[in-house]
Amino acid sequence: MFADIAGSTALFDELGNAEATRAVTTLTRQMGLAIKHGGGRVVKKLGDGVFGIFTNGADAAGSVVQLMREQYQATRALPESQRLAVRVGLCTGEIVEVEGDCYGDAVNIAARLCERAGPDEILATEATVQELSGRQRSGANRLGHMEVRGRSEAVVTYQIEWREEEGQDNLTVQGGLPSELGALLSGAGGNGRLEFDWHGTRQWFTSAAGTVYIGRGADCHVRVDDQRVSRTHARVDWRQGSAVLTDLSSFGTWVRFADGAAPVQLRRESCLLHGVGELALSVPFADDSAPLLRFSISGGPTPQP
Image (cartoon, rainbow, N blue to C red; front, top):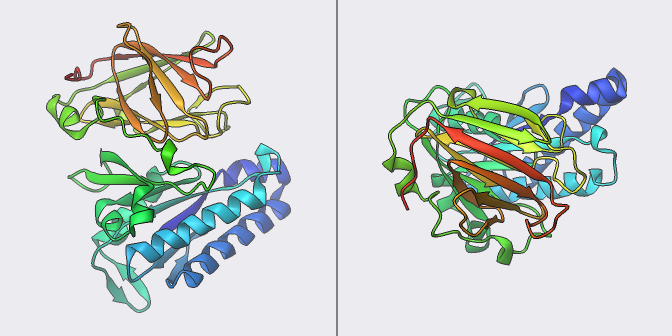
């Protein structure tokens, strides 16, 4: 398990060195305690992060979920600029211990998943999810194959839900969407280009840019300045040249394509973006006041129905 703090740089600008250092140190200590209380062992601390090991994935996931919930409750009343978010990578596999440190492919993958995770997000490998209990596993959302730095093969990755207020009934399964693995792998790879338009402000990203985060938070690549939008509302990953949108928000994301089909509602689920369309964030399209983010995709493979 690798866990580190997202947004710590901005906190130093907001609070100054002394207060920000205290906040970061306190949260890092909480990370270590969460590992120990969950039955794991802290291998080492890494600046504003922690590296720990567990004997099984269920204990690791349980420890991290509890950490996320406690951090959310402790900071929910603070101004957004003073909040610290945790991001986590989990991987199950063999390790080698040398003089108290740990090495191996599982260690490297966990570290890379932590890098790829967004604020308040837990990413885990399929091997870890297979060790979860039934209740834990019901909150694991498959994101598909994700490229990680330093590996020639993509890693099957899941997002583990931790928010208590999100009931499992809200974790919809969009079985008919072209985000299924077969559709993702059916297209040839390519240099896709994704463009967003928020009230005339346009930004574009190529597949080489990696993961793109959308939200109200200052650390998001695409900032949507609307209080109804979550700090980290959604993410876009490039897989096999295709742009895959995953909802990370509290209230959901609606996707509407220009082909006139009915909008797709996402609640902690994924959808393959294609062509031209719009995203309604937290509020459905039926509400005229909904925050609308326009998008267009070019250069990537076309999804199969």
